[in-house]
Image 1 (cartoon, helix red, strand yellow):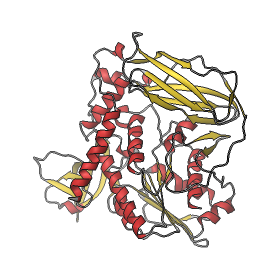
Image 2 (cartoon, rainbow, N blue to C red):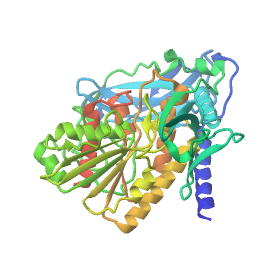
Image 3 (cartoon, rainbow, N blue to C red):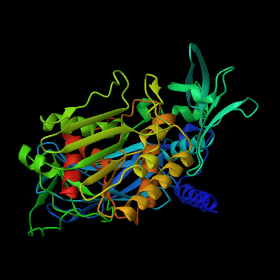
Image 4 (cartoon, one colour):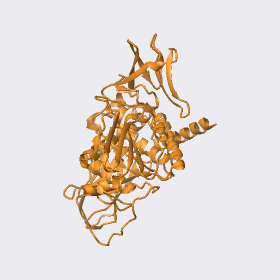
Length: 484
């Protein structure tokens, strides 16, 4: 009964996402959206604006033949910025479904500002990526290594393998998380010790569809004549409340000014002294769970707090888990990678393997315990159902945790944007955007905090799977404000 209910929820979330996506095909690239032919018009032009006002821009998109687009679904990125003020913010895009978009830029800072409007993928490319993602989980494959005494064997592994062969099934029955390997001869399934990911030469895109994802067609600026915007401080701004758990997830959630992140919904302390950071962390047990963008948090803490020392976990060359401690101030911070799928350039051990939901179940929790997790980057090449099932299972684990220990602080670090010069079928930011939508929806009613790394990395214009340290530290400042 419980499994059926969860499966129904997963199907409903997938259906909600599917309704948001364009479902279009094309036979001629000239009918696809062209950034160069599209137009941007300011609907409320002024000589000067006030802080707190909006700049409203209408986008009318055209195809490569100069014809007006009659449907939406284009993957756009809108940003307002000032290089001299080291400032930036995301624009809020509304799709009318007919080739017209409305972009609202909230004017957050006094001074100058400029507008950037990018066509990341045309709607035809978005449709192709969404359809291709449904077709298979084999764009990234895994090779398993099995050891049985002195015997060693290897076998193909993944989420779905041929049922004609004998399989090793690694199933979490409660959470219905499954991973498989072809069973090696004369070696038991329990003898698996390591996995090595690799790219499979498989694509579910046609040659014509692939042409949309050539680097020259990605992130193209939509031309506009919107010059420098002048913004004055007309009215005093009101102070907002302290950062609290259970707050809604607005978009944009904040802005960059003088290279620092300023959330819209709460006041933050900058934590710019070592004493402030150590006072906040004193007596805390902190768990970071997820991918290497979460590991960056621990690495940044290690740089900022010299008294933190790594424990020797005898994992040389195996980046699976790190623990840093300060025994005098009773601080412990741990990072551990999430479970399947984990993608990297080298093989990794499975002997300390577990899913995030199981790791959360193993934590007692109390008012001095904080958990931050992130999921996303490693899930992009696989069907969305795998990601949604994982996040739903994590939500259930958090619900169990907050029942037995309501004082435990739980934060979600959203997925961040990444570089454009990478295989788009596997790792497009569109996949991350769709996952971010699902994540926010699944956790919408829970007493957790959300660090919107997507919004932050758009505002900072980082375009790097591993954002620079100053961006990561601004993510961490949000975390510190929540737990202290």
